[in-house]
Length: 316
Image 1: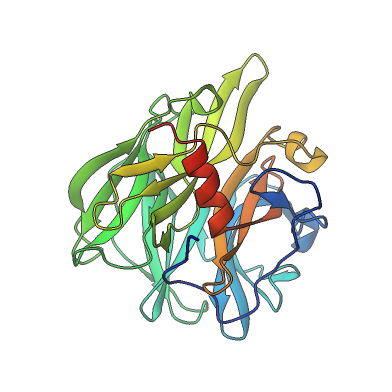
Image 2 (image 1 turned 60 degrees about the vertical axis):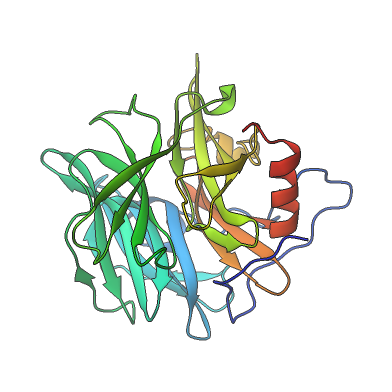
């Protein structure tokens, strides 16, 4: 039985048992979407957001596209991980945040907008009130910057996808390393699109989850059809000491657009995972994902079910 090594919440994470007769390893919360534009004044849409255990409940960083269509990030808090109160104060401009606790700090990585293209911004907080911004973690252009939750061989690790200034013909995931979160290098290739469901591009999703099998990585994959892009969620297992090495990788998606709030929205047909809450003892995982670039959905799995699925459908 696969086990989560570290990173579990001390609080009760959101949970709903798997529906009877359901065969796939990831299932949706029946109250989705849990966050919509109605959660914040002047929001056109709220999606692609990340959460983490904090205090007696949970805190998060949320992508908000305003009615001006400016892209900004705000914070929010919840007692149960389902009902959220978002703040109107903008902490950064940009989009698609991830949040990761390392030691006693919470590190935010996000797509930061510059005149020359997108870069990965890095900032940290201890209280979700005041933030310290560090050096940008890459040159333009890149997206989907995702930190690992601890140092590996005394180095911080960041997954990212180099891309162009448009909607990215560069579809591979790479990893880079740093001793101090200021100077980055030692780039390594991780993986490329392989199967049809992800053939256009792939990008890292939630903070990687450390398990006894390796780092469990949920990621998004994109296929281009005559109707445009379709974003789905896949999963892989990376080596614990050399996480640029892929040990196992599912050949098929775990969750794809199906429900009305995923199929219809500002950008139709999008499931975009950005965060996962964990319970170490039970192995439960609650996954937060952006739905159709309009709202936030919640899905569930266990580490054992997901690892088993990856191995049974392994393409490496």
